[in-house]
Image (cartoon, rainbow, N blue to C red; front, side):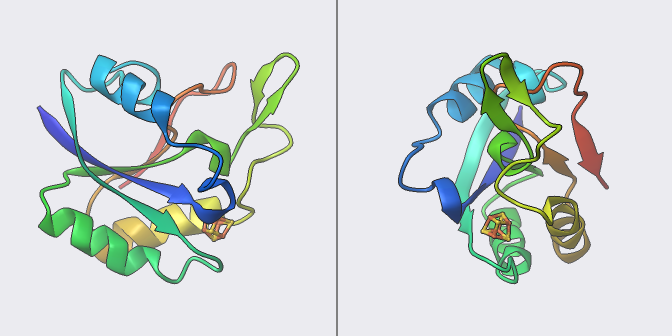
Length: 126
Ligand code: SF4
């Protein structure tokens, strides 16, 4: 059982209640498929320009998180043909955000939660 913290983007915070992020976490599918079992350590919301993620990652760690995932919508968009990474998502700096999270907390930070784009293998910063 691994405890996972999710950090979402403020640009989606009033439209998405993370339904499928939690569903796939519980089912250990999509970006959580590498874990044998998951439970949530909590959720935070990143706010531009993302300077708050280092403190959030440390707090999630103090609450038991062993890994952090950034929501798929931060780097991919929904299209007629499913989720697509080519046009990016809400955040142009998501890889820098992920690196900051790992640097600040020492925790692995994975790009992705639910509805992964086709042919995308989750990238983890360690
Ligand atoms: S820095 Fe990126 S992830 Fe954070 S709120 Fe801004 S766009 Fe969203």
